[in-house]
Image (tube, rainbow, N blue to C red):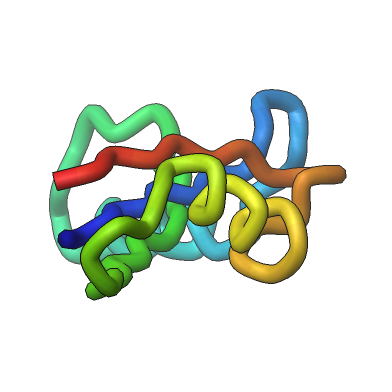
Amino acid sequence: MRAIVKVMLKDGVLDPQGEAVRHALGALGFAGINGVRQGKLIELDLAEGATEAQVKEMCEKLLANTVIESYRIEMA
């Protein structure tokens, strides 16, 4: 079983890495990019019987800083 966790900064939280990417893309000649938000993707290879509730607990305790980040879980 696999879980995919997508972690992004919450709206309103400054994203300096995203801003650096936006600036670099502009310097490379890519026009029309008004904003970039950078996040992280975490793939978990889980033992049979693992639940989404367990993955949520992992996110709350370690994988995401829930003060400034939101996350989405996809179980596959």
